[in-house]
Length: 225
Length: 56
Length: 218
Image 1 (tube, each protein chain N blue to C red):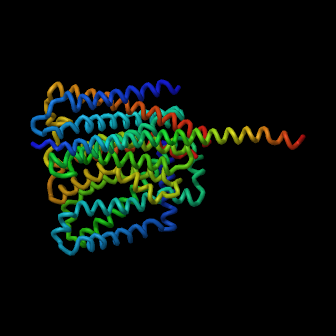
Image 2 (cartoon, rainbow over the protein chains, first blue to last red; image 1 turned 45 degrees about the vertical axis):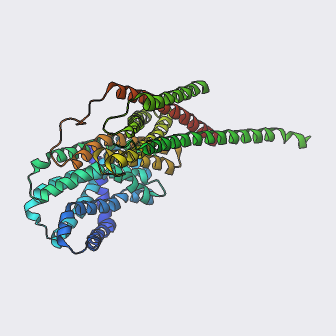
Image 3 (spheres, rainbow over the protein chains, first blue to last red; image 1 turned 180 degrees about the vertical axis):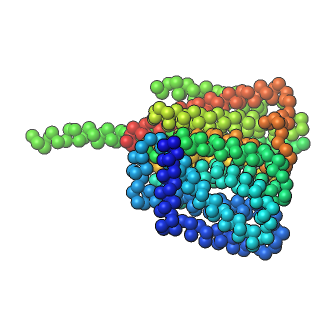
């Protein structure tokens, strides 16, 4: 109970500071919009080609905005000299990890919702019919991304070249999640039931479980000063 | 089916080059460390002897 | 201290020589592919030993986080480095083998893809180590990454396999394994043993070097 409360406190603290500054979220929304333009210009106006590439583009958008957003996950602590505050928090440090994962999850889901609406408007996807199944797929994929991303963001927060190292570490590890999420999204957008991609969903769920477990078990070692 | 010996030799040659190169790199680093250690040891020995002479 | 390592080196050298003799002298010319198939005696042991190396990284990383023994960290570092080299050899020889048999240097075949992803993951591991200056911190972070990377390998394997095969997943891990002649198996085993010895020699040498580096530069 105290454990959950500690995680909640971390989440709430980040939420409050974000609500006051609105630093990350505003910029991320704008970034998502820019990505959409970028895809459009890179692939041309051919609607059929865009529709064929849509699941991949969608996840590319999620991952790029996720990289930008998650890379900043521990920046506030780092820049404002609050790292020691995190380290000195009593009890199990993995509560901090789970709080941060939850915060990043919320952040990513918000950006993903915006991206999804933008995609639906610009590329003419029928969101309403797929929404529930799409939410399941995107949720599973995003949990895995946020779980590893939070862990690596804490690691790279100390490195000088963190903007470079963070994606270099995160992207190769995320290949299974990316493949599974894109394939499952593809099937959902084609209107297929979820059973046809049950193995992909299983893989995503397994990845989520593995990453979260490793994160909880090892976060202590990352945080110590 | 043709034998493609050139591909076989290319593969084995490349592997030999990579493994040999790694081995030589390790050896060179070992020698560099030994030289560094030696120089430090010499410097330390010099420091130990030098202050005693001018004081006398 | 130095003698067992030197003995291991000589054993590896003898093993490699024996492996070459077996691969080129004793193993028969393969019927369908011709002599180009002899690349297999280099290609397959390299990746098997690389898997061994990354397994060692996992064990050493876990041990480090648990016990905080500097030796475990050095072992993980050395093993990852040697594993990356062996993976590179596997990919390069596979590419050279693929050109005459498939007609292309590279295809996004399931096994090729998953091995290359593994290669990139461990390259990133070495990059992380190189970029962290504080040794104790580098050890902790690398250990975490070493664990994530090793647990990621099965996920990569399955995802890439399903990605390349459009249909439902197969029940066996490696389908279509061809039954092989006993001489091929023997030649493969000897080369595998030689590569394992070489791995042991390189890791021992690298661990010792790391230890001295840390002593001298401390």
